[in-house]
Length: 253
Image (cartoon, rainbow, N blue to C red; front, side, top):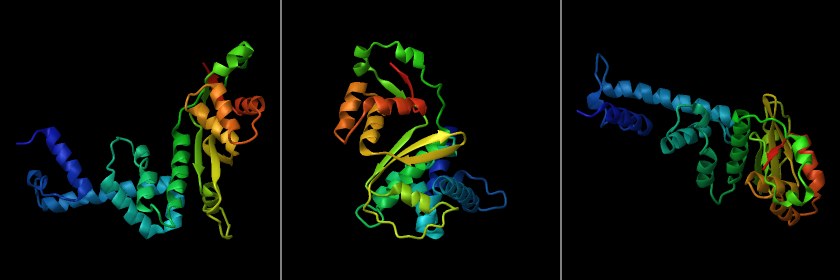
């Protein structure tokens, strides 16, 4: 007789894959065929997962249509069964799933739009942080600034794409009446932040995007400034003041 853990694992695998041959002999019929019982669980599992993905990726669903989204979601759930007790993390591999599904074809932009939507989801789930202590920063001697490592707010996300992902995202919001054709050959760099219980998105130029990305990776101020300067004109003092004022940079060490 299998252990409880083994039965639970077999049950989970059967529900995800739709193959009941291993677990069915251990299910009591009690008036209903074991396979029929398991199909009820599988259907509930798939529909719950579908609802979670629809909630996280409404723009992707609008772009591909309800029926295609439904089938793609079931394919995804079979390939990426949930590893968490929370549905909040169910869709974390959806962008990479779409990247592989549409690699090299005209719909490859969907993976980047999905990445933007996932970052929206992460921004709302992320923790908070107190603003930067300005008096502490002012006390730092100027010669120490190059080695400082600044901390970006935990609810900040950056998405760089060779496609106009923000324009696509905005054109597919429920309140949008945009109907113009979007040129896909228009790279964008998007900053996502949280304001209350909503996400704010805006475009950054290449230099500021690189500075924030470098800072988010935990590199020194000096290295981040140098990296940003390679992408265009960059006034480090002005940008730092703006990011601190916007509470996007919240600490340093």
